[in-house]
Every structure is written in C-alpha cells, then in structure tokens.
Image 1 (tube, rainbow over the protein chains, first blue to last red):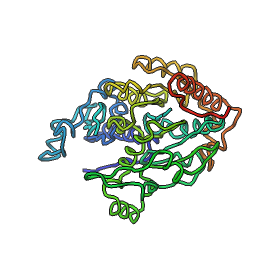
Image 2: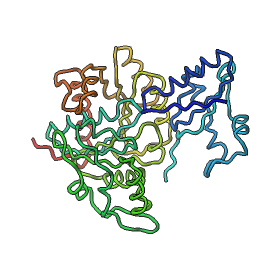
Image 3: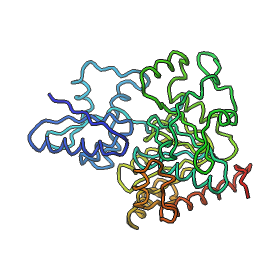
Image 4: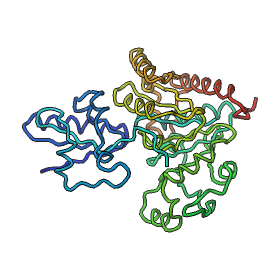
Amino acid sequence: MTKIAVAGKGGSGKTTVAGVLARLWAADGHDVLTVDADENPNLGISLGLGVERTHELIGAREALLPDGPAVASSMEEIVDRFAVDAGERLRIVQVRKFDHFRPG
Amino acid sequence: MRVVMLGKGGSGKSTLAGLLCAELGDRGERVVAIDADSVPGLAQVLGMPPTDDWFLAGMAVREGGGWKLDRTPAEIVGRCAREGPGGVRFLQVGNADSSLKDFEFRRESFPGMWSGTMAFHTVVRIFDDHDGWVVVDLQGGTLQAAGGLVGTTGVALVVVEPFAKSLLTARRLAEMGKWPAGMQLAGVANKVASPDDEAYVGDELSRLGIPLWASIPQDPAIRRAERAASPVASLDQQGPAKAAIAGLADRLGDLAARREPAPSASHT
C-alpha cells in the first residue's frame, strides 16, 4: 500500500489535485481509498460525487463517538463502515466536518 | 460594528479584510484589524510585520482552571496593536510563530492560553462591544463558526468564489443552526470574472437566504498586489476592485448607521 498526503495553503488546490490523482490511479486499475481529513471537506466534489452526495457524507469521527475521542478497532473497520463508492475501484472516507453550532 | 470574515480557505478573506480595513481607515473611521487565523496572512496584506499573540502575556489572570483577559479592548489596542495603513490598528491572535521553542514557552507560561483558538475566543468576545470598526479575519472553513466563537453581534461576511466547493462552505455556514439575532450574514462574491459568475453566486446564496452585498471582480491589480510586499499599498486605486471594496464599505456603513449606538466616531 502506498499512502499519499496532499498539503498546502487553503484554496491552493489540494483537494483538486488529490481528487484527480485518485481518479487517474483508479482508471489505471489500482484500488484507491481516498481520505478527506479536512475539517471543511470537499473531496467528494473533486471525485465526481456531486455537491448533494458530498454534502450528505457522514464524518466517520463523529459517527464513531460524537463527544469523545474516536475509537475503532482497526482501519479496516472504519473503511468497512464509512467508505462510500465514488466510482470503480475508488472509495472515499470523510473524517469529520463542522456543520452545526456546537459552542464550547 | 464588528465584521467577521468567513468562507472557504483561499476564497480571499484576508485580502478583502485588509482592503476593507484600509478603505475604512482612509475614510477616517477607527478600525481595529484582528487576524484570528491559525495560518495568519492579514499582516502580509496590510504590509506589516507579523506580530505574535503574546500581547496577551501579562494581561491574563487566572480564573478557575483557566485564564481570563483582565483588560478592556481599548487597553489591549493601546498597548499591543501596531499601526498600519490608514491608521488601522492591527492585532494578530492566531498561532503566529511555529518555532518549537516559542511554542514550548507559551505552553509552559500560559497553560490554557497558549492556543491560538483560546486567545482568539477571548479576544473576539471582549471586542463584541468595541467602539468603531473591528474587522476579524478567521480561519478558512466552518470550525470557528461552529464553535460559536464568532460573537453575537455585527456582520459575518461570507466570502465566496464562483465555484461549487466555495458555495458548499457557504451552505454549511448558513445551515449551521440558528445564528444570533444580532449577527447579519452577508455574501461577498470574490474573483468574479463575468456576469455569469456573479449571477451564479447570487442565485446560490439567495437560496441559502444570504444576501449578496458585494461582487469583487477578478482584478489583475489584486493579483499583482498579492505578489508585492504590501498588497494594500500596491493596489491600483482606480481599478474595479478598489471600487467594489468601496461599495462594500458603503453597505457596511449603512448598516452601522441604522444600528444603535453609533458604532464609530468618524472624523467628519
């Protein structure tokens, strides 16, 4: 397994680069798991899921334990439970998002 | 009147915050500019040296398990703010300096206050009722807004590029829950290259119940200015971006004039 991290300033194009790389590798026959670890996640849009399905993606971290540290027995468990198909050989796991008021 | 800048990373919050501050300053308004981004960039836009958040040092007192700022906004500004273009008073309260030594010093000296988020929280709160303009540049995305850290009064300017990802951020902000009654959400379309761009942003925002207050054109003058040491000082004063920023300042001034008490002592 090869892991690729994409980093940079906001708006510089991390998500677009990550999405295009993932789609190209998947098209070449590789199994690709994408992880959107941005707190304001948009990778679904770059993968071609569309705005609505991207908007509906669940943050795995919140789903596992809403008010505490995320605990899962293994990476496989997280992928099994939260990965969504975004095309052939292409999946996405969204880590978390902040889309409702939670003062404190 | 407090103005907080919200929007996706890279949408242009810092650039517009800096240009807006300079515009208000040039009009003789009293302006405090606060960079609360954990990746701060407002100093660069204003053409100023990046200060760090340790202006809080010596001003915090212990309260319960945490720290509280024992100073008024005026005292903080008087002691710690640096003066920038148009007489703007600038404060940086995010995590400015990434050097490990500095980080360790902060953590040991001010547990609970070392984090930019905490400093931001405290400073923004105490500036809620500050006289004059307070323009707060926030971190990209929705985290600070979701944490209820943007205060309860003033204007939240949602900066939006004419792209789906940028609008999804606006949607998350709009649908986050019930915004405080004293907080007006308003949209600013940025990097607008055509009437189509403006219509797209305007339509999408209107669906979210966010009025479009300004449309900032994709002015080559801004791109050039962004490469210069001081974008604010380098901006073409006759260009379309400058005119759009002036329009935004007018709009904010109208709202401020309608709200009591008078938010600013302008030198007219």
